[in-house]
Length: 201
Image (cartoon, rainbow, N blue to C red; front, top):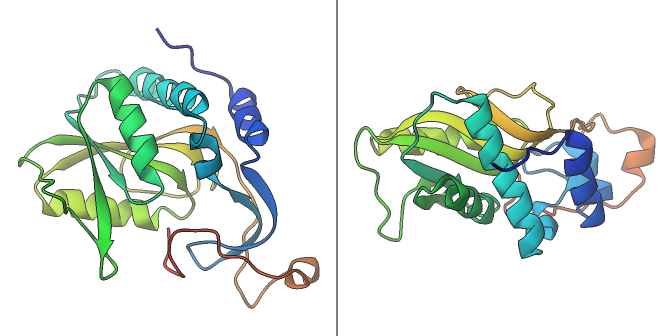
């Protein structure tokens, strides 16, 4: 059985990967933050990605022992690798939803059989809006979303995807409205490191 690491160990994996960046970042929610968690830097090391996703799969099973899943669905782009690798450890098929004109949709021949019990898997959640949008896509396709899992919940439990959430790491960082930036943050040039422009994630 895979050992579930403590949050300090998970955080160390992100730090070693250089995935906790500091500066001035515009998040996909439109909020501004001095800290950005770049999961792509974690997942570029296959061994590290495998360790973390195996641990996430184990935590899902330990947290929701009676849940039965038949499919993993991940939102593109950030969730694709995490969803696939987590599904591999859960021995489930994996597909992903992607945005078409701003709305999540299933493409590439992906389909969900009505009544399929789904685990949605993300890399990082902040406000959980994109999680809810992905869940709505799954439900519109006939799937039943049982739970969501993510590597990092950067709201530290404050976000609500509308289904049980299992996070490998809870890590709260400050985030500000564009018109309420601290002076030290406003003095830095802003960077948009996410995969899409100002749409909530």
